Amino acid sequence: MDDIKKEFGKEGDIGLNILFKNKSIELNKMDKTISCNNNSKSDCFKLDYITEDITQKYLDKINIYGEKENILFKEMCNNGLVNNVNNIIQELKKRKLIEIKKNSYSYVIKTNKFDIQIKKNITDLNYLLLKNDEYKKYSIKKYNFFSSGKKINKGNLHLLTKQMKAFKDIFISLGFEEMNTQNYVESSFWCFDALYIPQQHPSRDLQDTFFIKEPEKCQNNFIDKFYINNIKKIHTYGDYDSYGWNYNWQLEESKKNVLRTHTTANSCRTLFNLAKEYKQQGYIIPKKYFSIDRVFRNENLDSTHLAEFHQIEGLMVGEKLGLSHLIGTLTAFYKYIGIHQLKFKPTFNPYTEPSMEVYGYHEENKKWLEVGNSGIFRPEMLLSMGFSKDVSVIAWGLSLERPTMIKYNIKNIRDLFGYKSVV
Image (cartoon, rainbow, N blue to C red):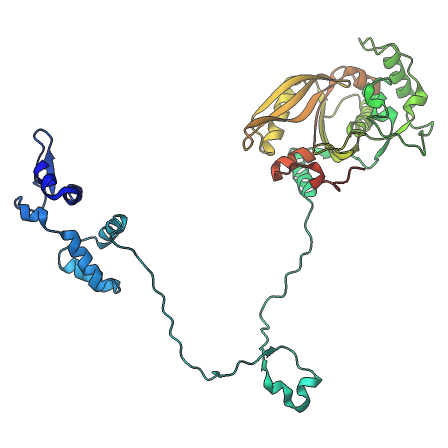
């Protein structure tokens, strides 16, 4: 093999590689000699066999019949050059010895509509064209009565509306019932006091909550007196094995109207009505509720915060529901929205204990994101309504905007909801 490389140089290397590839020759690794392959069609090994430039024969045939593919394939096969023409063509192309070009041809003939003059097309006839046969100077365009009309943009659903419908379908498929959330204005009693949030809590300050000027307060008969007394007692002195908040609870403070800061106020109303049924029947019927609606908070506007947004809330009512039920429910719920890995972090909420922040792993962003808040409603809240100690409620909530922004890769919440103005 060294003699051949010395004699023929680079061309010898190429020739040997082709023969090795075709398994026409084989290499003895001990003494670096080459010989005919016993399984090849060659009867003996001759120098002429190696030095014969088969590649040049391929190129000669291509130069003669290159523009006639069928004849080229036939000639190369008939002359015994190669059985698989496609393989050798690709090999020559790979070695940049040939290039493949595609030629297109058009055949033009005259028809009975041939005219040396180009006339302007018209689509309508009017008086001026009919007068003195002016229309004959033009070519009248034929009507296509089978063509479709111009497509009109009829508008599309807003991204939040699409996502809201998707969440509603998930809740309904899991057997949840939608709560009534039509009242944007709530009394402080339902928004805070009934949820065991003390009247001096920071969330009830002007910098966090929108208070209504007119009417400033709700009517006196806005709620059951027995329930009001229970709320006053649990806030002031404590009860049901609770120390309470130990302050002088004021009824007038609870009458102040606000734009609801969370839909949990509606959840509280729903639970209170369910407690009435429970006291009449003497037993609890397991229930599952959800709500998706707008809430309002006095926050600074930026790329991730607005003064109004949507809150998604789900809750389940039953006997002796615990943390394991909550985690299992959250795992099932978030799988429906494409989040399969969850982490839970302990946190504090005034009206739930224990409370957990929910984090989900986002596959595209490759990081953990906070996707909700959850907990078990406190006994101070449920027992004040009239439920027994065996009745418990697990609940969770998240915003509608955040998963929508993640899904559609929206960086600024003002591009998704409302105008960009900072008023």
